[in-house]
Length: 425
Image (cartoon, rainbow, N blue to C red; front, side, top):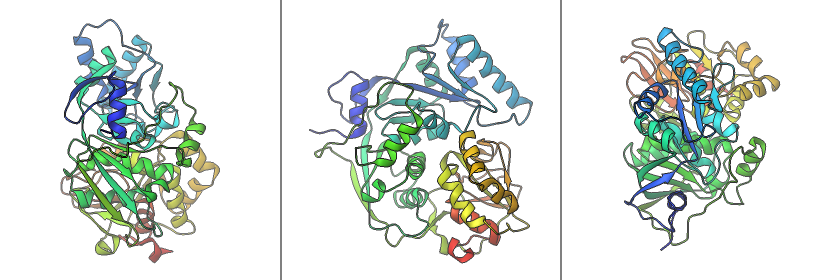
């Protein structure tokens, strides 16, 4: 019987010819990611093991990206703890303020995430790297500690679900709209502990940035991982890898077998799809932008590991060029990495944003999880290109947060309320 991409990667890293859903296996890892929030917990657990050293100082990635720069003394202490551990263990890949980016954009950019790898991270959105054909998933800090010591992790082989996208994408429809629509269709637990495999001609036509966005939010449907094929036809993947330059082993690209077994196959025709907005409380509350038009806003955030890449900034700049944001809408734009920030500067996008009345921040996860750099007050409403809008996610529990793609976010910042981009242009 055939295997899916996910099953093939797991089998390879478990030293097996094949694996089946439900099996418990121990797999070797190619990368272990942690940050300034999950890192200190993992380090404390690692030290309790009384292990002399990490399994491989080149395969542990520690990024201070959530409170960048340090938001307060507690955040500073967290980062200091990680920094001292990295020095002590001689970690090759420790990144801090001025030399860091939002982890799930930064690591692929550095060539540290490659097709066919197994990558685990102390952050739920580690599933992002499935856009490159890797098996990547978020785990707890104790699992991170064990992996830092042993270079392996145990897991249950997930069943696979396939979502096939067909039809013709309309204007402003990007990976963010596809994934919000999909989560709305499946539900936030619709892919619980499943390998969510995205396929079809629409996915094959997506830019690399949109591919990252889709896999990034697989966890919002409950998935263990999100993944896509990176076969020879996917020129966007090839170009991205050539530009990033792999700093690890030679990539191995897997394809699902024709007779691979899926728990379910869902087909979605995108032809009539409108830009999507997730209403407050859950990414699964997806609706067409027209269904929530007119909702007044206090803040717009464009950025995060979901939508802080060049495609996103260019889409926002197209809307904001020659326009001003609404005087009562705080508009915060956060390039996901310093490389993206500099590219945006070269293209004149930063000038466009500032002339429009927006503020541009150093790369940080800050507002996405209500840490800093843009929190909501009680009773305020925000629209963000981030990945979660749970109650209190971006600040006060009494605030309300909507999710969208960058074009809708930028247009809404100009209008002062949620609006379709075409109405502003």
